[in-house]
Length: 305
Image 1 (cartoon, rainbow, N blue to C red):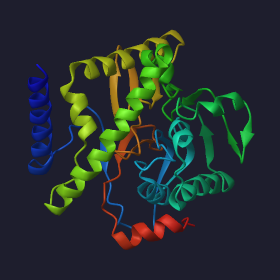
Image 2: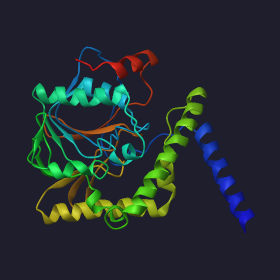
Image 3: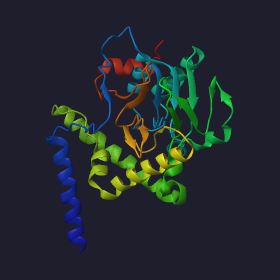
Image 4: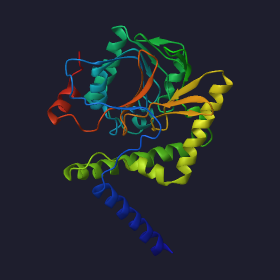
């Protein structure tokens, strides 16, 4: 029996490695609006949106794509910026301290936006839940809120919340959530190794964790239950839709007659939800590893003006 288990694990590992190193992956867009952006374009200009939502940055972890986020913040302006939870990863920082200059630069850039007139709203998630005790207070021109209501330019009332409150594992089995977080970080480490190989072979970025989520039926069911739970609560509160994060899966779709929006993450997908001046919502995908190495190093030590 033990021999069969080892053979199964070895075969699974070999299949994952083969898929990751030989097959270019095109991420499914489903029925959603996705904008592909070239970060090297228009170095002096920037996109201007009515609203930007970002979440699940996980500053304080090696998996955080702080350089790419800093570049995104430099080239995308908005009247309002929502930080929808898991901005700083307190879970990982308690285990071991990891805080490079690029992570500090992201914080400074957000604070600078707030000082220059952008309305920045921080809604803590489960990884930065310690900040929830300060809900209703303002720090550095940034209010901390448990949740918010956003009215789009075309009149839709959207409930903005991180979403962990509707994750049954986080609510009722936190030890399992911690275990899952540890396994997820291991997958990210393996993911970096696989993608370094893919880059050398000329293939684009490929997400191991997203692949596993798509293959595991329980993970798919969990996401569907999460979406419906949020929509049910938004409908109960009388809203037209919900904007959330938490599950690292960017999406815009209609669920039970309401609008479901997830802004994704800045660990793997590098996505943000944006509202255009007319009220139209899009998911912006910021490409992986498109910045020259020299520019990445410069951005890691300099906050864009």
